[in-house]
View 1: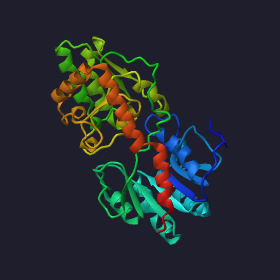
View 2 (view 1 turned 180 degrees about the vertical axis):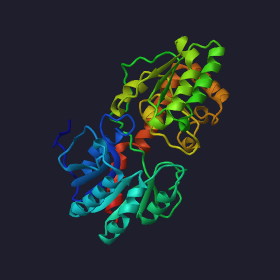
View 3 (view 1 turned 30 degrees about the vertical axis):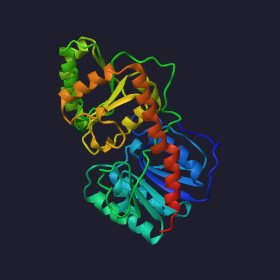
Length: 360
């Protein structure tokens, strides 16, 4: 079911077309974008949103959501037909275009938008980029990224942006009780996430008879069921001992409760990646351990472990568990302050609004 509310007022007269993968407040991976739309609605007089797929949403009346039809099982040819139909039909309802993470839409619509003199902003944060990314950057007027190691980071059009963490939702819950020596992972069960390294580190801690528990939240995409089976098999003994738990994925808006229950959140994505779950953890004042060098400007070195190195991760986990309570609290407070000053959603909405306002 789809709901709408009308209690937000736009702050300017600019109209924006947004193109994204999915609009669904309950989605475990892309649910955060619903919060972005709520904030952006305060900055623009109208938002027209084209998404590949839509689910449930609660958005202001100045937001219109148009789906390409994936939820109804439409074909790719139908997606393309609808895409062109929408960008032409609603051409008077937007002054600029913001494409989130899918440069192929910039390639498909770029020529039309150039003719219509619509400013094009492409958000692309992947470390690697193929032909569509290269062509999308050519068509775009501005290329936005959060990671200094993003494929799109080093062009004349590049602008580094806040990651857009809603610090009004992602915050410390003083009433929450932390599980002793608890280790958290939230995300997809995919090879790029290197969850097998975390399991190997947990085995090392187990051999040392350390008291700890690992909580994994997520699900595998259809293409990575094989990887999920491998890590399940690898973790079998830890599961039997009650030291490792697989949990269903949770909607993004419910994850603050999960972050608040754990001592440390671990992220094992390769160097260069700038995973939002790290920043969400920090906003909740939960400690983090990461392997990506993209976080070197955000974290003290004791919270960065060697990539693909289970031994180093195990050592870093032990160090975190040994931290005195007052030090752990202080680190958490500093982490949250960093997010508020550099990556909060209000700051992102303001910067997007300012970027759109700059003439082509």
